[in-house]
Image 1 (cartoon, rainbow, N blue to C red):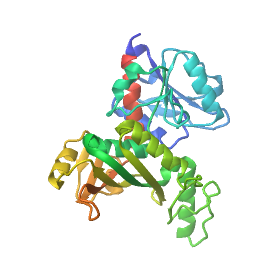
Image 2: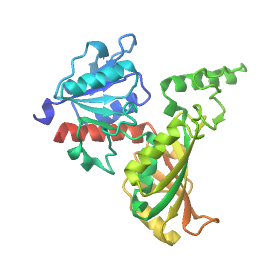
Image 3: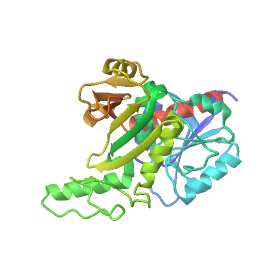
Image 4: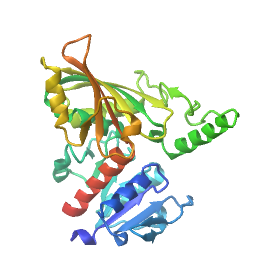
Length: 331
């Protein structure tokens, strides 16, 4: 079947990553308006969306018929999304899980478009998963070093948008109340105020002390960078809407000098070296910024650095669009 006969279906219009994804698809002219279907839950009121100068209606997920010629991107989770994934797979469509629905399912391969897209040719099911935004950024940042890595510690500072659109709306409302001299209510889903705050964890810890998101980050990094590398991670949530920053402690298997590490990072795909990168620099960009590179004072084989990226545009929307394009074109 020709690429032009294929159809892209996006489930989850009311999602923080939807707008940047639609923007990327439009900018790169990956599909036509006739090839795009937008779905949302039956009880969600979502306005029609503009794509390629055309108005695209948002259809009810429960009434949509999936078929073989489709690539389905799942941006939201829940029972209805689970049912949609099952129906799409049963009817022969490709499914790209960008909502962590299949996390932990070893029959579903994790795909990063830059690091392991060749695995698409060997998958057993027509379902693939997108790495978490934090894992996508960190794996891309460390890919030039992966053959030399012994262990990596990740301290990810994630924005509120990593928690979903409801959290963005909640922090916006809290910020407005505080600027007007009113008390801001605690976000009931998180148990803390989001505005002007920094959370050590946005979810309850497990028995190990890690959160599920931290273990997911570790799982994804092991798949993308290799099981032989030891990983640990912590995730904080900071009171910014978009843009993520990770402080990385990297231990190498052998002695290496600072200039060599810098040269390797400088040759990485979609990486850009910066002296003091910030989320402000990264938002709207299509690269991961790398900076603050220095040798640790604790271990001569350890180097510390910082990675920064746009968590929605680059590490969800662009990665989704690139994988979907490969599926539409080649599979």
